[in-house]
Length: 199
Image (cartoon, rainbow, N blue to C red; front, side, top):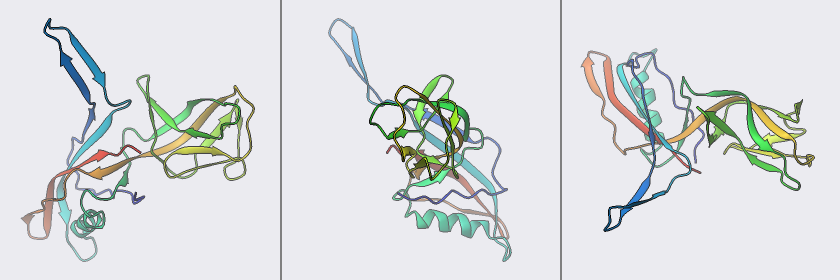
């Protein structure tokens, strides 16, 4: 599991794609009645980016940086972190209520009322229990999988909220990537795709 962050480049084509993917099993009886099973508890996200321009000048070598990032992950082998420009932060996001004897809570984020886990946080998220701000390091820490860990027991039944930025933990969907020389020192990568990784 890697914690490298996907680099941003100015040559990104307008129109990023983000797709929610679910897995459902459907069985149909002789009478035509259907029985369905949802295999996922939350969606897997697919991202698709297209870079129209990647420069290869000595001072700015975006092609080398993107190719190096892809190769360092060994294609689809190692996961990395991606910051979705439109979906990367929460403010006073409810996590749940404290439970007697429980010190670990998965951080979550809501999207249109649907709640799903956050797999990686940026910097140090701010956490409140019962409306009171706690101190990072002294009162709590957060693992690289987005799990909030209290260092001291919290009274039961108090609401937990958090504020901060987050990443999607993803991996490349393919072990290959195509780069196209469009003009002189300008290159393009028409399709860079990755999918979220469930932990």
